[in-house]
Length: 92
Image 1: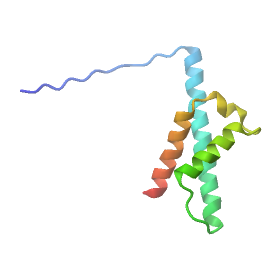
Image 2: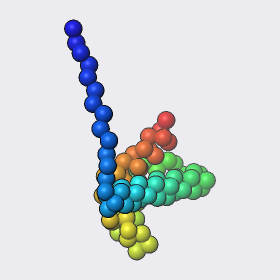
Image 3: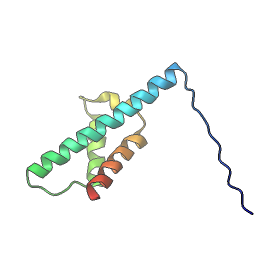
Image 4: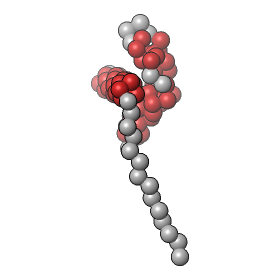
């Protein structure tokens, strides 16, 4: 007989950790919305869908740009995953 067991954990971040988590979530939301606006403008212009690799290059430009230097404060992997989520949504 096989027994399945599960564990439940609750995260209790302190004030600084909560602030960082909110900052990371806001950065991901900003990148997702900026990429979505770029996709929509591209579609209205009659161009083809922009893939993940090209969007990742835009992300690098946004992180190194002068308008959004605060994106460098967030880890890059969640930002890339936001772009992957958008790419998957467009492909579906």
